[in-house]
Length: 142
Image (cartoon, rainbow, N blue to C red; front, top):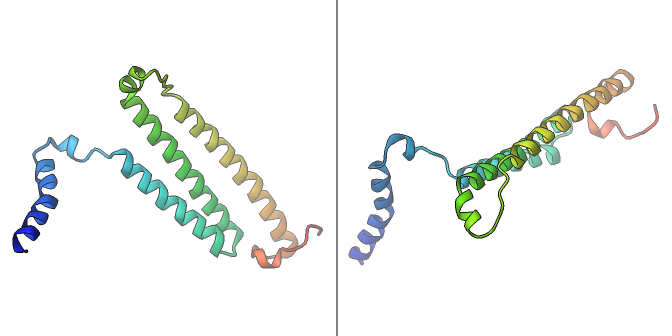
């Protein structure tokens, strides 16, 4: 029993020891999983902000977090495909390394337009209703 727990502990420590022998740059290079986990956390925080807040400004900021999570995914997969381009070409798959950054720039432009239009609507609502709470903005006419 003690021997199996020692082997199990050694199995968990061995990758860390092998990683410590790698060069400093290689040791701290983020992988695709790191980017996906960060993107997932951004997405979850954004969705939680949209679902739980009543202030429309905070909801717009949460939508921006969701869009930034998508941008991070696009750039991470673009980088991953660029690194593995030779292996994918060997399987007959063509990889366009600019697809991720192009879509990311498109999303940033759309998010900026959404923020400008949304802020204009919020300012107009605040001038007429004197509130930015979603519960109190329930009519489409002024």
